[in-house]
Image: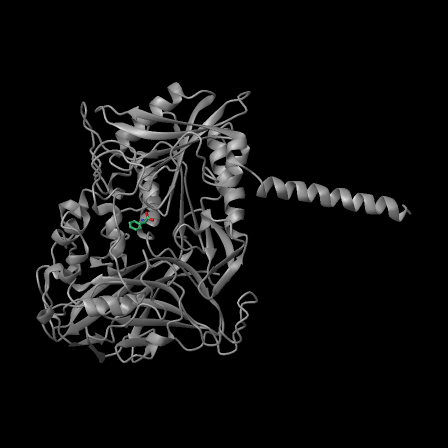
Amino acid sequence: MRSNKSLVITLLFISWVLTACAQDITDYQVQDYYTKTEVNIEMRDGVKLHTTIYSPKDTSKQYPILMQRTPYSSRPYGKDQFRSKIGPNEFLMKEGNIIVYQDVRGRWMSEGTYDNMRAYIPNKKGKEVDEASDTYDTIDWLVNNVNNNNGKVGIWGISYPGFYATYSLLDAHPALKAVSPQACIGDFFFDDFHHNGAYLLSYWRATAVFGYEKTQPTAESWYTFPELKTKDQYQFFLDAGPLSNLDAYYKEDNVFWTQLKEHPNYDEFWQKRGIIQHLKDIKPAVMVVGGLFDAEDLYGPFETYEKIEENSDTYNTMVFGPWSHGDWARTKKRQAIGNIYFGDDISLDFQKNIETSFFNHFLKGPANGETGLPEVKIFNTGTMQWDSFSEWPPKKAAKKTMYLSNSNLTDKPGAGSTEFISDPKKPVPYSEDIKMVFTPRKYMTDDQRFAARRPDVLVFETPVLDEDITLSGEILAKLKVATTGTAADWVVKVIDVYPPDAEDFEETQEYLKMSNYHMMVRSEVLRGRFRNDFSKPEPFVPNQKTDVTIKLQDVYHTFKKGHKIQVQVQSTWFPYIDLNPQTYVDNIFKAKASDFKKQTHSVYEDSAIEVFVLEK
Ligand code: PG9
């Protein structure tokens, strides 16, 4: 039996080691392990793009290059100014990689003219440029000029940088081996600024970020946000009235606000800027990452993965977690969105065991054989567990149709209809806690009881479930509606109703918070004028029964035994989206106050929700 003394010494040594490791994580200083250089790389048309290069100080070995191209600035600028963290995550930072940030054309310290979601040009000639050629030219310069690089390049990016990551797959440089588009914008008519043609009014302030053009390379922000004296976003926009009243808050030269107003339909302006259509014959390995509760870019990641899967033989995988926009890049321990707690260390585990493995396999490893990562890793937001699939959507899921009949979700259609009055003067709030935000990020698991109890929200639900039911894949809302007016928006929400005795999440510690909680699982809107064609809007014929089909983005959610599935249908969702006048006008951005009318809408009982139920 060893003496107590040696036991104490052993314990002291263990605690020292742990502290040292902990210090290593907390005391890590980028400047102690990396040098920084800044270069202006000349593109094929002569424009120079400002590029920051962090290179490991240990020059005894070679490293891959991990790059991000961004419209949000590569700052801090200055060779002695270091970011506190670099790269996709801290594991890849501490392992040592050459990490590069680049201001895209026309932004911050780069030259050139910015073009918001610049359109891809197939078969470019001579000095024709787009984001693909800028990426190609940049990679070519880097692999030929940066010391100690191993000739392999990876690209990652979240949101707008995610769009540039997707873009890098087109006409890809041969040195580009691995790309991770994350929360990647696919198309501004379905991501961020619009959802199925409805303008996201809640994004209004963000228009400043992309609306003003700088006249020369600058390290200082050149755009300003509208000065507002309120946090109450609902009241502000309700009081503001028609969208044209918002012009006064933007200087006349806000290019993007003008583009939004001039292109209310899915016209060539938006179509040519969508990137999904070009994703074919992709060569680099791809890992698409998204958040199942990402309020900004949900369309992009799902469409990016599925389009590459359809059109390319490359290694193409997808990870979708219980995250809001970009959550997976943070190092917080507790993963929760609003009142819903999903577990601890979910993001850190993703960074360490998935993201780092993906890049190391293709950039440092033999890059052949299996990565050991699943084709699809997706979090079940009902069981709070990760699951893996060899394809998405899962083949072993069967379509099930539920009809919206007399407040119930039933197996058979009804013969009647339910009506409600939709009043633009008292629109349905999109949440109970609406603040004047840059973009709405946290509402997607909010309790929907407040809405269920409004007369202008129709509620349909199953009886209490006597067994678990798991929905996997897209949800299609096939509504049959009518309106006394000639225009209307249609919002569908799919909700998990917790039982009255639902356990509180240990972490939440708010007594009986989860009792009868109406957790939003998925929601989507369609601007009714686009029901047949996003590029050809058309009015409703008053009081005529009309088909309106809305695709809700994919889910992976188990509705547990004792819960209920609920569907809510409404016509306003304010100010997440702008108000529909409910009388047809060519361009809602130019509607007058007198155009906005209260109308009576009807939802017929042969309306249906089509879901995919995963077989047990
Ligand atoms: N896609 C996100 C966004 C775009 C435009 C305005 C506001 C947000 C993002 O890049 O974060």
